[in-house]
Amino acid sequence: MPTAVRPLAVRALAIAALAAAALFTANGVAADGRRFGRFDFGGLVYVMTNASAGNAIMVYLRDRHGGLSPVRGGAVSTGGLGGSANAAVDPLGSQGALAYDDASGMLFAVNAGDNTVAALDAKGPGFRPALRAVVPSAGYLPVSLAVSENRLYVLNAGGSGAVATFAIVHGGLEQLGVLDLELPPVATTIPFDQVGAPNQVGVDALAGHLVITHAGGGEVLTVGLDDTGVPSGSITSTKSPGAGPFAFGVTRFGSILVAEAASGSVSAFEPPNGTDTLVATASAIPTGQAATCWIVVHDDGFAYVSNTGSNTLGLYTWTRTGRLELVAGAAATATGAPIDMTLANGGSFLYSLDAGSGSISGFAISPNDGGLRRVETQGGLPASAGLQGIASRDF
Image 1 (tube, helix red, strand yellow):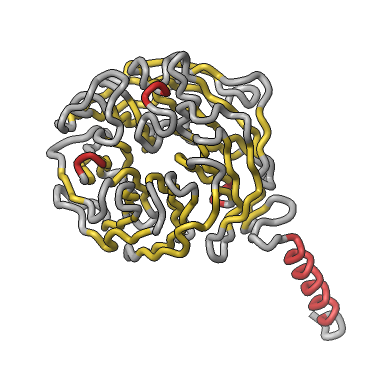
Image 2 (spheres, helix red, strand yellow; image 1 turned 90 degrees about the vertical axis):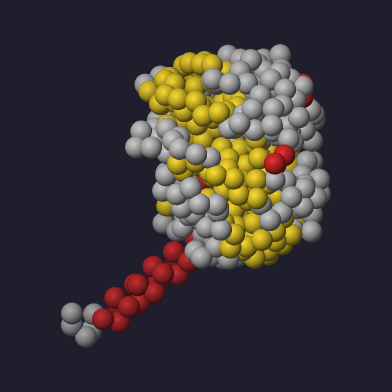
């Protein structure tokens, strides 16, 4: 390049850099909806009514600034009965009652009132999911779902507890197996003790183990998965350092972060290793808040908890080695008894289902420190009426 041209090129690059910087807001999300080079086309947020008279999914359109608006047409039936009659807030005692699978484009919901699971097509025409199948949950009181590599795992909290494995097939589900958890029995119909029952099912980072929290037993259960994705072998029980291990999330490095409701704390464990008990890397780090029940893990090293009893959301940071540190026990305030949470747009936004007030609180997440800035309060949901489950889909 001739020397006479070089200053012009440098000036052009500087102008371009300034223009790019001007696009970004203080929370790291671009004014045109991009985050770290990814354009946000918006998306959808789903909430499950869990109504005992007829379960349904409420659908909200998300814009690129995090705002929500109800999709026309009303709620979509799940074809079954919910479990709202068990309690006004958190009637299922679970995390993951509603799950979206981007690979199949399916939305899955538990029908705790009639022991079934619903499969809805979320990528068909329009924004409202279409009911495709309703299948038996292969147990009593289904409360939690997890999707991994075209497998759906359903945690049945009733009786002695059971996890059913389903293959996700075109338009529906095909049962592959059932694992009896052999826990102290609870009721098989509503009402049931949702605190003493198992609370969440999930899969570890390598899809080699199932993980189940059991607050009533103060334990985290793990069991290996065979080559077909079906649980196989003996169940390992690990006592949680804090009281009431309720929900968990898995970091991208494999650590398992467990929210302990009764002690208002979070513990961290190394990834499962065969049938060995889990090894704690952080023990019962307190939030200083009440009823720290739900947790979501952000890939950028943050974790958020719902402190239902304190009406707040807490913020932790985690490292690849399993170190855990509390940043703020009350990083944000909800509108009334926050329970389930979901992340959207690759972690740009966090939404909490505030079951006590019948609202959804939306927050923009700072990529620098994980801080939360409120961008939405969506009311109009039934308050203290048994809502449970929230999930999101990005366009």
